[in-house]
Image (cartoon, rainbow, N blue to C red):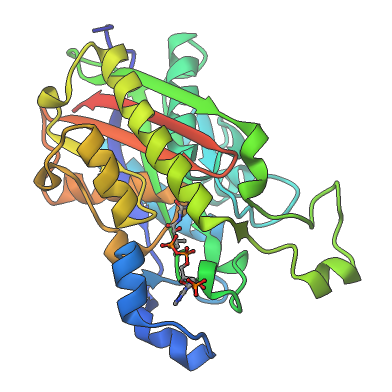
Length: 329
Ligand code: UT7
């Protein structure tokens, strides 16, 4: 096991108040059922941002909670790493909006685009900056307003996603606690299985894009499902190997929350009984890069993660990107 370099000092979350249940899709003309959604995904409801509630405002709520719990002031932040697939504006980054909102005047702030694995990627960047001596106090955020980029006429995707943000303060490790092993990987050859075809610089927004609805998320669900199961299994093994631990050493598995069937397959591969797996996809749907920090924050708040707990985080998403991390609290 390597000596940990960085640890989570505290976490927080920012969740929109508005809840949309599976039954509510009927009112917007979507032909689906609670039974189909629960059986195929495990999702029962999701939070949807209200007008004016943005990626930045949700990120700020999560960040403020994490900072308060860590006893960190805005002026202490050296760096803000914000993972999002739903940047509020195409330029500049949402991280700089968050910086201004928090008044974190000393920080370098930037977004990363690594979809549902983004919190693992962001924390890896924070750890590396701390290891290099370039930062001491880093705010890592996963924040998503997925309701802005999903096609509300496509039942195959619109039932899956939700909005929210999770944040963590990452600082130098103390007393052997912190990140014991991690792994990140991507495969851009598979990008078109889960993507937004147009609206970016390669195919800027125009009338055709509007008519084709090609600025919304498109997903080959079954293909993504297969890759998610395979890659999350690999990621669990790689982080455990890096930490020189086995699943018997893990107190809680916190996987990305996209589909309870993917979570169950990951747990089975990792040899973790479901009572040692954190599941909240039923209440949030898939919040992309926010899902792992939201789940981690809930797990800490409810006492499922305590001082001394060893936790395995694992995520997979568009890109494809995937990653994992073993953390001792
Ligand atoms: O964040 C990481 C990336 N995302 C994921 O990890 C998601 C990965 N994929 C999945 O979770 C699953 O593939 C889905 C939940 C998206 C779909 O489940 P599935 O069991 O793979 O269903 P399917 O796409 O193969 O569709 C089965 C049937 C189709 O009807 P036919 O062709 O069999 O007649 C669909 O038209 O279910 C139909 N269907 C629906 N029916 C009711 C698709 N969406 C719905 C819906 N309500 N919302």
